[in-house]
Image (cartoon, rainbow, N blue to C red; front, side):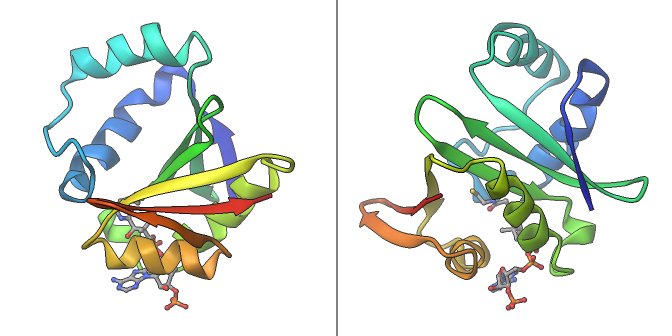
Length: 138
Ligand SMILES: CC(C)(COP(=O)(O)OP(=O)(O)OC[C@H]1O[C@@H](n2cnc3c(N)ncnc32)[C@H](O)[C@@H]1OP(=O)(O)O)[C@@H](O)C(=O)NCCC(=O)NCCS
């Protein structure tokens, strides 16, 4: 497995993944190509977010994004590659890059796959409101 930092050439890949799993996200609307480009120019290029793509050899399987200001991470695996251990392997690799940070995940209450994934990766429940916050000090 390898993690590759996002470039402008990859933004359609992450848009595809994000839209394919959007039922699990807080904003369930579809992201358009223009919105994705605007996000790249106005948010990503100004270092407000860090994004890594996950590859198994040459095959793209998903991505994670991290907000360095809040410590909030989100991970998304392409549906056809889910439940093949990619989420766990990739999350562990990404967390290696986060030493010294407290990392948070904000997860919908019904998102059992994600809650289980973060528990498996050593996260603990920090709070439960209308969503679950989990955290781990790296
Ligand atoms: C959550 C997500 C990243 C998991 O990725 P994945 O590659 O399918 O997960 P893995 O195959 O590595 O599984 C790791 C652990 O996650 C949990 N898990 C994964 N899929 C699950 C499912 N369908 N039901 C219950 N637990 C599940 C299990 O604990 C699993 O460990 P196990 O195999 O030892 O039981 C993936 O389902 C996804 O992209 N979901 C949509 C986006 C999302 O909700 N992201 C989280 C917001 S931060």
